[in-house]
Structure formats: C-alpha cells, structure tokens
Image 1 (cartoon, helix red, strand yellow):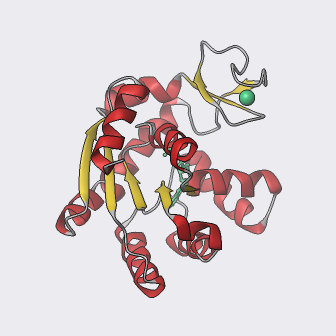
Image 2 (cartoon, rainbow, N blue to C red; image 1 turned 45 degrees about the vertical axis):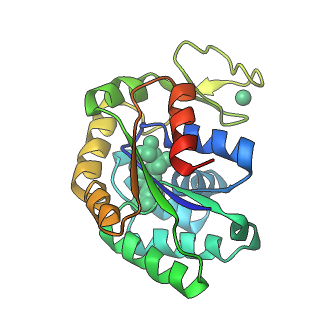
Length: 208
Ligand code: ADP
Ligand code: ZN
C-alpha cells in the first residue's frame, strides 16, 4: 500500500507512521528525519537545509524532490511506503505524481490527520525527542522510557518557530488537501485524541 500522510506539524504523522511500520512493515519515508540526518552528518544537503529548518521555513522544492525521488528508487519501497512530511507544496505533489506514474506505483490513499492549530502549538512546545532512539515523548519524560537515553527539544520546536511552521502549513501545504480530494484519494481522521485511538481509526480507514 502506498500512503501519503497529510496534516499540520505535530498532528501525529510520525507517531502513526511508527505504529503502522511496526505492525505492517511499510517503508517509512520521512523527509524531516532524512533532513535531520543530513544536518547531523554535515552533508552538503544538510548545510543547505539547516537555516530553513531552524526558521521553520520549507527547504527548496528541488532539494527535497531530488531526495525523495532517490529514496523511491530503492528496492525496499516496492513493498509499500508511507510518505511523512512530503509532499508539502503543489510542486512537490505534481513531481511525486510524475515519479510514481513513471514507476507504475500509484498512491492508494492520502490520509489527513486533522488537529486544531492551538492544540498543536501546545503539543509541539512540550514535545521532547530521544537523542538515541528517536522516541517522541513530552517534557514529562525526563529520560527516554524506551532506552533510557537523553530527551532533547528539537531546534525548531520553540513557540515562535512553531507558529511560523503553522503559517507555512496553512499557506503552502493545506491546499494539498483539496488536491488529493480532487484525485479521490483523501481520507480524514480526527487527530485530537490519544494516539492509540487515532491509530485504530487509521487502520479502519486504510482497511487494515
Ligand atoms: P514537522 O512535520 O513537525 O514540521 P518535519 O520533521 O516533517 O516536521 O520537518 C521539519 C522541517 O524540515 C520543516 O520545517 C522543513 O524545514 C523541512 N522539511 C521537511 N519536509 C519538507 C518538505 N517536503 N519540503 C520542504 N521542507 C521540508
Ligand atoms: Zn530512546
């Protein structure tokens, strides 16, 4: 199954992806994770991307499209993938369609995890991530409950940057909801509930 996850930053795309991967083994393509890995490794891409990311702005389309296209050419994506954080602009959506039709692997569904913006600002400002295993928790988690690693706040998870990320989402990414509705691929889930409850609905919506 080939899935695009839509939703504002902090809507829970990463959390739901993790659950789906654990249970069904889809390949997770998270452009945010790929970019953070590039920043950490100090690659050319990472250097270019960091300034945009820290400000909460989008990394230019050509960089991101190249990254995703390359990733989709790897064989582990053939069994089905979850795109998390991509596409984020109309240009990215069009490029994705072109690439997938070239590969003859069309999308099955665009799943929107819908959450109110004010809920999101609170959620993200208290979000903490494990430096070792990537577990996503809250400010309440003093150490990682999974591996005991150090929990830290992402550079772009402060309130000012979060507000900018939401503006960027509303301007550039939210129009994709209509785009996928037009392709008859859109399914919407209420994301303002506990992760496990959301997950049950996600599975139902995907027919899993
Ligand atoms: P979130 O969904 O919580 O905002 P992500 O981890 O998906 O966070 O993305 C973090 C940052 O990486 C974004 O704010 C943006 O700068 C960059 N980024 C990720 N995916 C894309 C994309 N598809 N296009 C442009 N920039 C991206
Ligand atoms: Zn951990």
